[in-house]
Each structure stands twice: as structure tokens, then as C-alpha cells.
Image 1: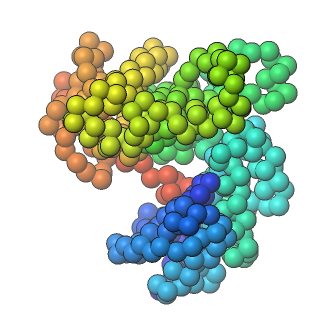
Image 2 (image 1 turned 30 degrees about the horizontal axis):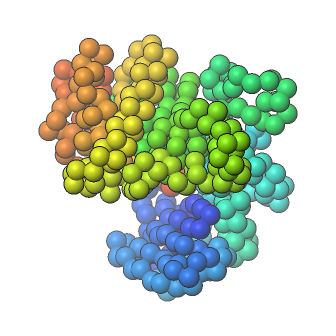
Image 3 (image 1 turned 90 degrees about the vertical axis):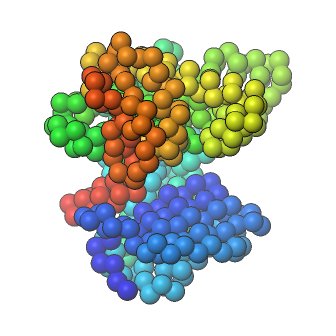
Amino acid sequence: MSVPGSVLVLNAGSSSLKYQLVHPDTGVVTAEGLCERIGDTGSSITHELNGVEVTERILLPDHRAAFERVAALFAEDGIDLATAGLRAVGHRVVHGGRTFFLPTLITEHVMSEIERISSLAPLHNPANLVGIRAAAELLPDVSAVAVFDTAFFHGLPDAAATYAIDRGVASLHAIRRYGFHGTSHEYVSAKAAEFLGRPYGEVNQIVLHLGNGASASAIRGGVPIDTSMGMTPLQGLVMGTRSGDIDPGVVMHLHRVVKLSADQIDALLNKQSGLKGMCGEGDFRSVTELIEQGDASAKLAYDVYVHRLRHYLGAYLLELGSLDAICFTAGVGENAAGLRADTLAGLENFGIIVDPERNTMRSKEVRRISADGSRVEVLVVPTNEELAIARQAAQVVAES
């Protein structure tokens, strides 16, 4: 089996490696999979080729071992990644800092720069870099391209990107709003305009990317003017395990009075907060099940989640001045019909009306869930970050 012209997309997390082999022109996915709990005794790989899925428990001591096993699985399927005619390897990198705001061909210098700015995303960039190095060792002759989560929001207006702290400190330490999930926000907003049959540059949108990580963006005519995540992916909406917005004084209180260290506070806000912190479950489906069982903590967690969503929705509606579309995307946004209905309930005076029957219909395609009389279009737009990364990587290689 050969897959000439395809791009291997890699998304390396701290203990995971997600991958997809996709053709950037057709969007056809040949294979995809996920290595989980890398470095743990319970590690595993789920690998899917042409719709056939297999899962194996296997010791994966590090990302290199994980990628070696992934390559072996491809080989067992008749695909030698080194000789298959790959166009590129596209790597998701979370933080580009002030240095990277375009898809970038990876060199030793680029890897050094990604490592240098890792302090801006200590939970993400080091893992991304491990994935880059592992792939480079096994596929040295295939061009590699880094696509940055922050790139789409690089040109945010100064008023949106600037934190109100000492400007010298901010400048010296690169402290500003960077925004994340940019690949998804860009892909979804473009697909929405296409679905509506309107030029991208004429559509004002609010995009709600709701997964375990969650973010909102305001996009005026194809150009982002604000987004909920900040210098790190911790700010903004309530997430599965992340707190989102919080009074900075809470951090100082936890340090001074509770005597928690910086690392302990970091772990608390990133891994033990959000839905999980409020009700013990970080998965939105589990929270919903708890609510159905009458769990008061889960109901409160849900209410806080919706409250924060509506807070940002209102803010972005005013910032945009006029609104053409609201787009829900990612795992929660695409599947939680009740959440979509609750988030937009009572907004008829703003021209936002959800059709209950359309909202409950399930599909993997872009779909309208607003009522015929709704002035604002409400859409569910399945995101495809892997395809977006593949296309950007292929373009960089073609131009290099």
C-alpha cells in the first residue's frame, strides 16, 4: 500500500502521541491513532486503518518508543513511512511565542527556539518538541513543519492582546495574550463562511471550541479580534480540568496563606480544577450522567460552565457590533445538544433562536441548528485540526 503525497500529522502531549495520515488535497484519512500513558506501565496504542480499529497494550517508555511502534504498525499494514512518498510531517506545536506566527519548516535552529520559549507553555511545548525529535530520528529524509496553536491570533488588536501590568516587565518577559486552538478557530470559521455561501471576509462570527480544553473567539471578517485563552491555555472558559478565569489574588492567597508552592498551584489550576475540581469528573459526558442522577455538585459545575460561556458570548457580541454566526465545535460543542440550547437560551431579542429539532440531530457534517426566523445563524461545525495542519505543512514544503 502506498500513500504518496500524504502528510503524517503528529500531536505529541506530555504522555500521549496522536497521529493521522491524511492527504491534504482530498482530505482522505488513511490511518489514525493514539498512544496513551507513555512512560507508564499502562500504556497502549489504538490504531485505525481504513476504518478497522485495533488496540494493544504495550510498554511505551518514551515518545521515541511510541513512534517506533506506530511506524511498525504502519509497516504491518504495508506502509513504510520512510519510503511511502510522504509530502511532510506536520507537527502541532502549542506555543509560538513572539517568534513563530507562520507554519515553519523545522530546522535545528527552529527546535532550539521552540525549546527556548517553552517556559510560556511548560506543559505543552516540551512534549511537542519530543515528538518532533522522535519523528526526525526515524524519518530524517521527510520535511517536517511546525504549525503553531497561537499563530491565528498573532495579530490580535493591541487592546485585546495587552495585559494591564508594567509594560517593561511585560515586554521583557513576552507577557501578552497569545490565544490557542488557533488552527481550529481558523478552520471552523472558514468552513462556516463556506457553508453560508458568503465570502470569509464578510462574516462576523463567534466560535466556541468546546472540548476538554475550551476557548472562544470573536472573528470579524476572517480576522480574530479577541479570544478567551491568554498567555497560556489556562485563561478563559471553564474546562475539563482547568479553572479558566480566576482572580490572580487567589493564586497569591494559595501561596501565602495555604502555603502551596508554585508547582502545586500550577497543578491545582491546570489538572485539578474546572469541571473535575467542582464535581470530581472532568469528562463532560460523566458530568451529564451525574446531573441525571441528581448530583448537586455536578449541576453547579454545569451552571458555572454555561455562565462563563454566556459571559464571553455577550462580551464578543458587543465587541463585534454585529453578528452573523455562532459556531459550536470540538467534542463537547459538536455533541452536547443540551449545552448548546442552554448557552443560547433566552437570546431571542438578540436575534439568536435555536431550533430544538435541528439541535438534536446528529451529523458529522456542518449543520444549521438555528430556527428559520433567527437573524443570527447558529451552526455546528466539526473541526478538523489535522487536515488544517496537513494543508499548511504541504504548502510550506511546496514553497520551500
